[in-house]
Length: 303
Image (cartoon, rainbow, N blue to C red; front, side, top):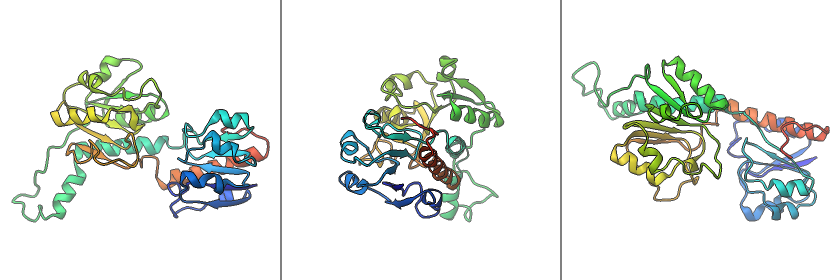
């Protein structure tokens, strides 16, 4: 079995080994592939792994030897599933690999907004503590999570894991699918739902207007769930106290981005899923998927 990965850098920038896949057959890693390189690179390979590259019908039709597509993530909307099915190509993905990682990052963002660790450290590095007349100094008020309400939109594996962590902090949990009104009046709202054509940009001016004044919005799900111009306006006006996002609609961002540079908006570059242990799990599951395919199995098969 000859296989390649078209865009392996985000999964393995060099700190892990591809050995689990290399043991199965000939394998080559491309860190990145441009659209016009994909067909040539696939060539006569039997299988490919793909993270974000678009695998279109045209690509599939120009690669007659292709038998296996391994998506290195849970979502697979960048692969033409119907074309793969028509050409008898197996497609596998990696489900539920990042539940703990995304839940952890959700609270990393929440805690940065409530405890301001980064802000205080930055002030200390600039010499503020040296100059203090007291044993401490004030660089912004901290917020206690105990007793606050957390509204969760999307109560799957990640949403439930976030709820468990929140309860440990003494927060009260409101779930959108059970009590929309309670969620809209929550102190914090966190998004954990998949992106669909029906909910794209559902967090818009109208939605935000129904939220509690001074609420805080967290998004570690999909960037396109939010109308970013409307969110920026709400942050500037004070309707929302703050937002913390790990995802935006277009990644990397296009200048000028409405949320970059706002003092009450924290951004991280789509890293919630990226702990080393989680990326190792992706490689291991991809190897298991390929081995299962070769043995006639259907582990994590979409097609």
